[in-house]
Length: 84
Image 1 (cartoon, rainbow, N blue to C red):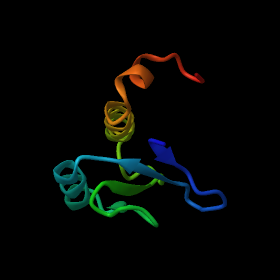
Image 2 (spheres, rainbow, N blue to C red):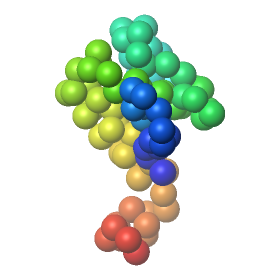
Image 3 (cartoon, rainbow, N blue to C red):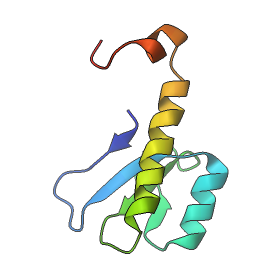
């Protein structure tokens, strides 16, 4: 899992994995990036999707989260097609 979106929240939120230093920097830079709700607070951030965090920043966070999760998989699973 590289992203989690709780249902029924307004505004919407997303939990994304990050390197601890990156997560801390983003939390300091954006008020709506907070420690991951119900997640390991060193490695996960919750982003409130209300338009205050630029789309490009969120896109970069999504890409980093995916990269971190894939890098933690065994090599055979990293190479396997999605859904395998």
